[in-house]
Length: 88
Image (cartoon, rainbow, N blue to C red; front, side):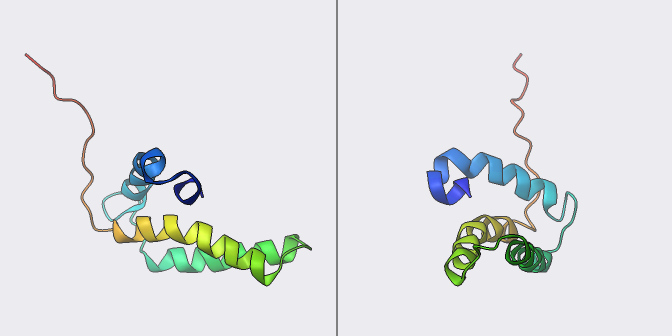
C-alpha cells in the first residue's frame, strides 16, 4: 500500500525484493495466484468487517493492485545481486 501512498522512490527497492523472492527464480509463485490471493483477501475483509462497502472493496483493490501488478510483471526476471563487488 505504501507503493501507492508514498510513491515509487520510497518503495521500489522493497517491492523489487518481494518480486525477486516470489518470482520464477525464487519461490516460483505463478502470477495468476496473486489474483486468487486478492479475491481471498477481499472475501476475508467482507466477512470480518461490518463496515465493508463497495467503496472499501474498491480501495483495497486499488491499493493492493498496484503492488500486485508490480510483482506479477517481474515474475520472469532473474534475481540480480545487489552486493557491492569487492574492490582491490
